[in-house]
Image (tube, rainbow, N blue to C red; front, top):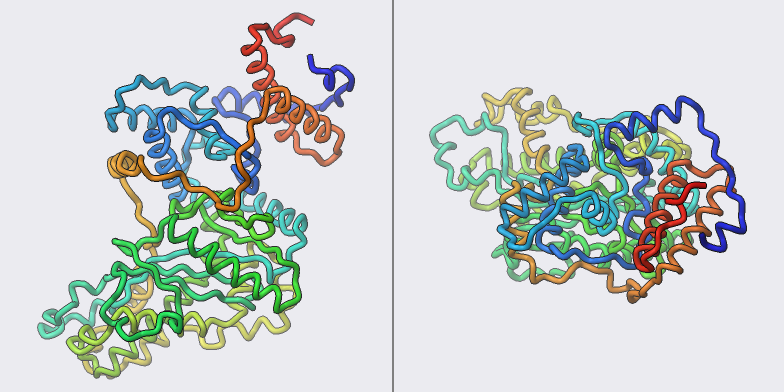
Length: 509
């Protein structure tokens, strides 16, 4: 036994009968007793080094599959993840034998900062209990870093059909033959980001397929109203997101905070989309501007951009699109000929700039109610709300719109609501991508410190010290203490294995 544990008597944690029964029931179901899924702020950021995997391609495929399932709001249990690892091993035709063991699972979770796997079978798209817990956790985060609404940011990407129009406009033979109407669902991806006070709306990010669209010719990109990126299928990916975070988000936030005489601290709240790098990558070298990830089972309920912001933005874009068609007297031939990606981008920028500050404040109410404390007149919100009725009123009695009704307008307004802005691959696609990207370097934060080899003795001493600290604090979480005890035991077993000794915990007391 180590000197630190021998010299200090540990504080006994007394559990109620109900708590003990709950733990036993969860253990019987095969669940590891980790911290709650809402505790997502530390993850991999607390780890300085991690042991790599002997099966890098397999590890990459399983992790991409895991992130995609969590982004979809699907539960992923330990047994399910192990079965999927075996499937990928077989599908990818990896010659080395692979044992999908609990040991591999623990190492996999450690490598990727996974704090908890789920055991429930239901979909996680709307867990109101977890959402309520996360509100408390988020408030703790805000208080711990002393953040104001000006320092709380949220970003989310969405797919936008830049040419799509109400379907009942395409009724006449002339309209059905309009060149380009078959590509009316041509998509770009838009990344929107703003702070909780609404005082800082960052430039939109628009992602198209072409690096140099023909309509951009002669345009000075430094004067462009958005940040334009290209990707072969116009998707957001981790490379683009990381570039945006360090080259645009961080400098813009620093400038804004400086203008407000606020400390250079901020958090960017994100969902678990596979296009987002891990939190140990997205942070500044001094850790003062960082990201926090929403648990996947509360994203749809609490993410600010999902609380009407993106929908309001798209409604404004649709109105601008509709007016452009009306300027051509409803002639779709002329519209499809003239409406370029550059027009769409400028329209996106105008629609974003037109968003009132209160829209953003109201979007944070479910997650951070304090954001509304400084609002003087809530009735000013969306004085001109863009409803289907108001849009229908604009096109009444216009040639070519006779068959468009309110239901058709509603369908049109929501036509790309299910477009996430990043690709959702099937399992075969994930396996193929993992093999083809084997030569790519692992993503890293250029500001991250160099790796340091930590000895078993140092690790054990740190675990003992941290455990002593948690057990002496009245507000410590029991699950944190239990997790630390398990880690300490694991380190002791590793020490005994290296020295060929039996751990003292194996001997009768």
